[in-house]
Image (cartoon, rainbow, N blue to C red; front, side, top):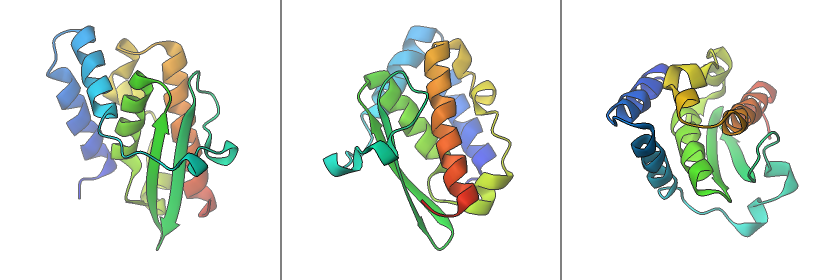
Length: 138
């Protein structure tokens, strides 16, 4: 399995394949279509990510110190961002998440594509994941 850093580089390479922002935007929307749906019962206050303009739910599950994540959003572009965040953090050890430098937006270059509000939402998703990893429980 790739490291978090390698996964970020792979995603960045995929995004860099596209010449303009609109193509990248459409690609991110297409990624969101790959998300597995979550149960309506999982769209709870507890799973709601703070700091997002749209509604975003992240559902963490920890087993044997491995973080399993699912999630979704009510906005199509944000679903793509959820997909990207899940690609980076899903199936990782809590230790791997805790040791990682979380300045992901700059690494991916998403700041050029998405609005500051969307960037804040991505940071909110990452913050929630880090809190779960630090606490070692849900």
